[in-house]
Amino acid sequence: MKKHICLASLMALGLTLNSCDDLLEPAIENTNSLESYYKDPTHYYGSLMISYYRLPFADLPDTDLATDDAVTNDLNSGWLKMATGSWTSSNNPVSKWDQSYYSLQIINTFIENLDKVEWYHDDVRQNLQVDHYLGQAYALRAIFHYYLLQAHGGPVNGNLTGVLVHTASENGATDFNQSRASWKETYDAIMTDLDAAIERLPDQFLNEWTEDQIPQRLKDMGANTSNMYRINGPFSIGSIDGRICKTYKAMASLMAASPAFEQDSWKNAAQYAEERVKSLGGRNRIDKRSIDWFADTVYVKDAKTTEVPSITIWYTGISNDNGWEKTNYPNSLSGQGRTNPSQNLVDAFPMANGYPITDSKSGYDPKNPYAGRDPRLDLYILRDGGIINGTEICTAEDSETKDGLNVDKSTSTRTGYYMKKLLHPNASPAATGAKKENHIQSKIRVLEPFLIYAEAKNEADGPMAGSPSPYEVIKQIRQFSGITDGDQYLESIKNDKDKMRDMIRNERRICFCFENKRFWDLRRWNDIEALKAPVMGMRINGAAGSKTYEPFEVESRDFQAYQIYGPVPYSDVTAYSNLKQNDGWN
Image 1: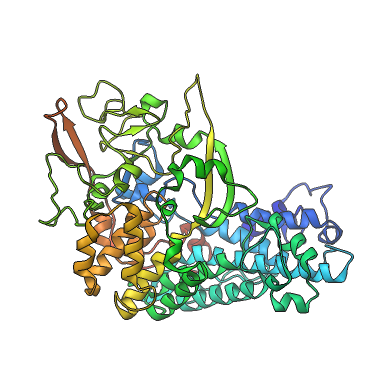
Image 2: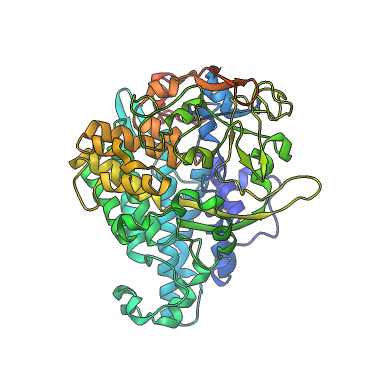
C-alpha cells in the first residue's frame, strides 16, 4: 500500500515526496513542490477533482449483471465470471480498495494544506472559499469510506469488521501494517465527516442568492449575495452540497440498520431519511418524471447545466451522445444489446391493477404474459413486440432478425429481453443517420431518500406510521407508475408490516433496476437465496396470435453465504500481517 499511496500523491499533485524517491529511478525532474501550489489555486483544487473522477459510479448497469435482474451477452464480462463462480479476493470486480485509498490520500493532503492556499486576497472570500472546499473534502472522505465499508466490511473470526479508516495523510514514516477498524467505528467516522461537511456547505447551490437564503453561520463569516454567488452559485453545481451529504447519511444509516449489519437502528435511518423527504417537499415531490424522465424527450432536451433537474439530488450534467444506445440497443438498431433483463425481473412487475402476477386476483395470463401489466414493464424493458426508436422488436427464438433469442452470440439477447430504461428513444448509433441526444447524468435520484424512508420507517414503526407514512410513499410511486383500480392490493396489505416490507423491496427493485442498486441491496438484506437463484429467460416461438411462451434457465449463479460480504484484496492481506481477511475468503 505504501507504493500505491506515493504514486497516487504524485499523480494528483505533481509533487516530489521524499518517501517515494526509492520508487522512481531516475528522480523525476521539473515537478512542483507542495509549497508552489499554495499560489496556484486552480491546480491545487485540481487535486480534489481527481477524487471526484474516482468516485465509483457507473452510468450503465454493471453490478446488476451479477444479480437475478440481468445477464450480459458479453461472454468475456468480468461480471458474468464473478456471478458464475470466479469471484475471489484477487479477482474482484466490485473492489473499491485501491481507488478509494488513492483518493483518501489526496483528500487528506488537500485538507491539511487547504488554508495555506491563496484563493483570494480578500479575507472574507478567502475564508468562505476554504470553508466551502473543506466541506467538499470532508464529504468526499466520508463517501469513499462509505463505499469501502459497503464493499469490504465483514466478519473476521465472527466479529463484524470495517476497513482502514484514513483521516490523515501518510508518508515514509507511516506504519502501514494496521488493523481494520470495527464496522461501527468506520460507520461513525463516515457520519462524523458528513456532519462536518453539512456544517460547511449550503443545502443547495443557487443561481441567485438573497440575503434571507444565506445561512447565519456564513453571514457571521461575512458572506453576502455577491460572494455567495461566486463561491456557492452555479459554478459549483455538480459538486457536493448539503442535500447530497444528508442523503448519504440516510444511505449509510440504512445500510447499518439492515439485517447483514445491524449496527444502527431503523429509527435513526428513518429519521435521517425523513429529514430529506420533508426538505424535498414531502411525497408530492414524487411525480411522473420520477418514473419516466429518460423517455420524456422534452424534459431531457430542456435540462440545463446550471439548474438541477427535478428528478435528481446529485446532478453531474448532460451528455449529448449515443454511446448508451450503441451499447444496449438491439442489433437491428445498430446496438450490441449488452444488458439482457431476466424473466425474474419481468415477473417482479405487478399487473396494472397492482396485484403481483402470482396472486389469483391479478388476472395474469401466462399465455399472454405482457397484457395488462404495470406500465413500467414496457417503459423499462424491451420485450417481444415492444417498440423503441420507432421500431418493433422481435425477440422470439424464431425471429428473422438478429434481435431474436441467441440468434447472434455477440449481439443478441440471451433472455428474450433488452434493456430500455435510461436509453433515449430517439437516439441512433447507426453508421449512417447517427443521432445524438441528451442524457441526464445523475448519481442520486430524488426517489432514493423516499424509498429509504419507506423501508426504514416500516421496520421501525410500521406501514401506516409517520407523515408521510411508508404506505403513502409507495402509493404515490405506484400511482404515477400507472397502477389502476385504486391499487386494491396495496390497500389490502397496508397494515401488514411483513407484506409491506416485501412490497417496498420489490418497488425498490423496479424503481432502481439497471441503476446498480440490487447487488448491494441483496447483500445488506442478507438474501443469499435471491443471489443464488438461477437467472431465467423467456423462449418465444410461433406467429402472432399463436405464440408460445416457455420460461427457461439462462444462467446458474454460484454465490456462497460468506459472499454476502466482499473480500479485502489478497495482495494487501498477504503483505500486511495485521490486515485480516473476511471470513470465508482466502
